[in-house]
Image (tube, rainbow, N blue to C red):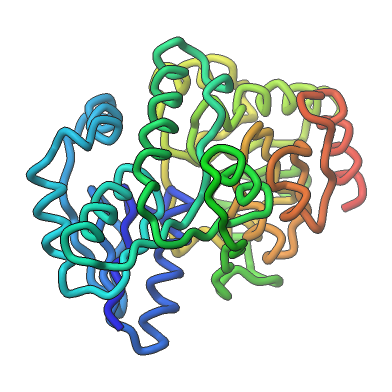
Length: 337
């Protein structure tokens, strides 16, 4: 069978893109011919092909281009035409749904939507960001009207999709790559980061976006540092909102380490290097890093939101928005080590 997997980006910094990569590998190992189609990407394909369609280089223009992708009639038509020999098109996110939808109409290809959800617009800061997310959700719903079937990565998202669109979906939890495992050596990463033997390391990886609530994580870390000054926080993520990233840098104290990117091959060892994985995110459809961290034997502290009750198996879920209780949970788990 020939399977096309569509995703806006195909980069290591995105949890969704790592899910796409794993899906492509799994299908190819089963003997299927697999191709990933993306607007941009830096993941090197292995046992599947990668087709980059292109988009603007500027981060601001990228966001506008993705939102109003439906205006690029030529690219949508050409991309859909390239899918004519495929049996299935699996789309992981708008605006790639538009290509899958067009391919179904013109080439009679089965269109499957893989639902990762969309963050609530009210969680974003500026009026522009709120409007952007509201429109993103609206265009996503329109692009699903002729989908043949849908999968959601959590029960939470299954219920959200049903509530918002009336579309039924089956739950398909994200598969964790076996390279994330216990007893990995994180000592080289700790040494490279300058973490001393008597210091604790908290770790967060993800998009530096307002709904990830990284600013609250910095406030939480400040409370932790008051009680445990020998603790450091490593934040790894692409600054998708530059203004927000500047705010984070201004807030951060000397014990906070920022890395915009790391080598993907080293990510399991980053989990191994930390003492605790932390996320203050206020919306998650699944939260792949939590699952990866736990696979590496690490405990987690997170807010009790979205899919977290389904995903967090080794750690503490904290009442949403309570930074003081979050800090207490972190201190409690660090003190047990």
